[in-house]
Image (cartoon, rainbow, N blue to C red; front, top):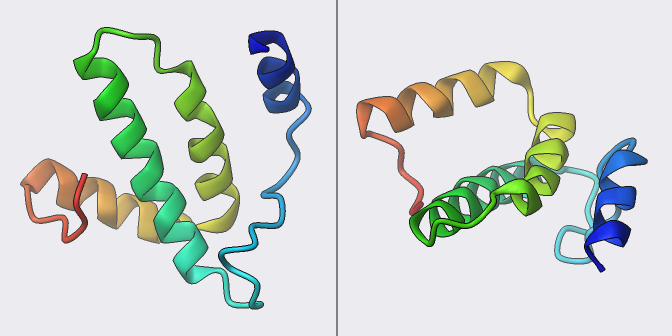
Length: 86
């Protein structure tokens, strides 16, 4: 099972279709994957587990989100002023 996931991540090109976000505007998809990455990282780190499964969310948000947004959100997380629940 883990080998299949690793193979999919290795062959990953761009964000796949997500039925939760069927419209052309992918802003919410970008934001949701950003949140999912950080939530996944936090949850697995707190349990002392490997955070490799979270790489999927990071690849998706990096392919969808403008770099300026990601930099802004990263800065807000560091400052403690990020509006999302992580």
